[in-house]
Image (cartoon, rainbow, N blue to C red; front, side, top):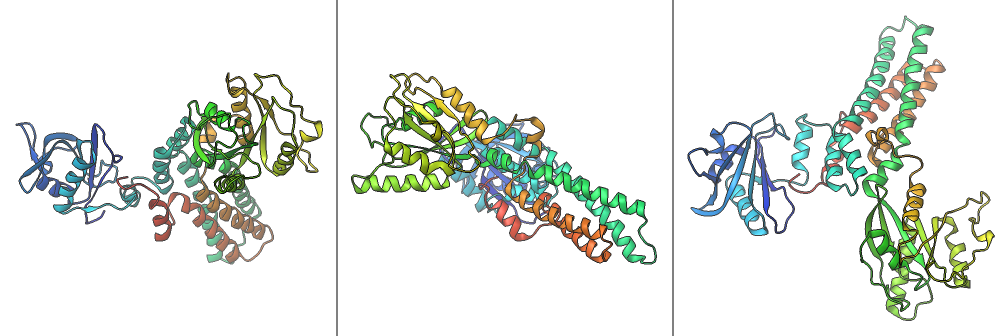
Length: 465
């Protein structure tokens, strides 16, 4: 619990029907009492109101009425932060919300820091650290699958498994430390086998979780795909088809796209960030030169590319150059303009990448005029970035990059502890490795944290959450 009371606008800035100002802390009701005047016989001051009730009244400052509001009274510990909480719903718009917040701050609250409400929920034991991160994931979800994964983590599905893993490591550590305290008693073969089996099961579970890291990061941040090709091949038309609306300017004039355009689309449940790039060719002026430079930057940062070719024209020398140049990238060849007479033929030796492994890549025929082939392209994109079926149980444990780092450290030291125990090494060394592994796992749910770690996580939240 904290002594001070924090306040912030909890809804997005801008014009709307409603805005919500949130207060939390020991003085939430006292601050609200100074700002709120009840209207009608059934409404009362916040400090006198029963928990989980809504009061009708007005916010007043210096005897001037700011707005008529509904005020929700939520008494600890049955609140998000486990502190006394007040939520004021006023009319939407920048000015009403700001003036209501100003009145609250003038009466004793302070402006909340980014993520401070969720941070207090964590520090007060309402949620663990993995669940706190899931709050941000819910807010930032761009597809239904991403939202489902975030809700699974918010419900504690990942935390339950992480806590079980940590408990097993701590139990093994307790057995080892007991034998350190009583050195005259050797570990019996049966007990040693049980300890090793528990460790191996833990390492196997960490391997299972680490295999979800790539998928988890795709769901949370999306995957970047650069759309490349010669000028006038139909890159902007393809972007518009994938988005389902006109985002990029389309023209028969080559070189229309001078800058990169980024938009996120829901591709079979996965957030894919498509980057429409300037057509690759020799620049004719400084503006086009800058556009092509930015295209090259986008190519370097993209996880895969959609290489668009004009099916109505024969393969050019430039096409062959770019086919070879992008051979190191994951890619899909998109033969556009198949509604016209097809003149493009791809030599068989170009349909494999220039590696010893000779991995093939998909070739999809589309017509951006009719939309034919676009659904097949979406299937190919999903198959390229996410192997196999998207299963519900995978969404429950899809870890983020912070979890991945902690599990990698935990797995490494757990394997060292296993090897040392097998070799009958000094038990103090085994115990040290086990303690490091347990602490690393504990970082995921916040059982072992540092102030820097918490600041890093919650600083990425919006103010008011």
